[in-house]
Image 1: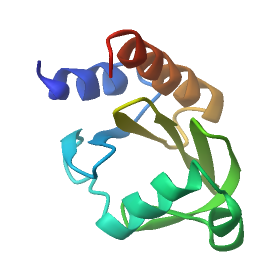
Image 2 (image 1 turned 180 degrees about the vertical axis):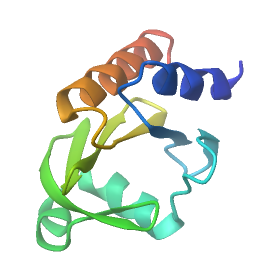
Image 3 (image 1 turned 180 degrees about the horizontal axis):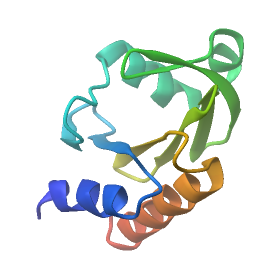
Image 4 (image 1 turned 135 degrees about the vertical axis):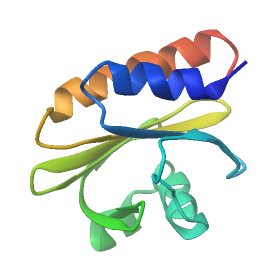
Length: 125
C-alpha cells in the first residue's frame, strides 16, 4: 500500500493544500513535501484527543505554525490561523492531518479528512 496515494487524493480534492498521515506511534507514513510535524507537535496533538486542556490554553502547533485551537473530541481536532487552518482526525492506528488555506474552507477540508479517516477505519486502520 502506498500511503503517498492517500496524500495525493486529499490534495487533488482541491480542499486540502497540505496533508500528512502518521502512525499513532509517531512514525510518518506519508506527507506533502515540506509539511513536517515535529515529535513535540505530534505528541501534543495525540494527547489532545484525550484531553484538550493544553491545546485550549496554548494552541495547536502543526508544521512549525501555531493555530488557535477551535474544538476537539476523541477523534477530531480543529485549529485556525487567519485564513488558514488544520483539521486532524484519529483512527485506530493513524492520525491524518489536513491543512487548508484561503483557497478552501474548514468544512471542505474536514469533509475530505473525515472521509479518509472513515475509509481507513473500515479498512482496519
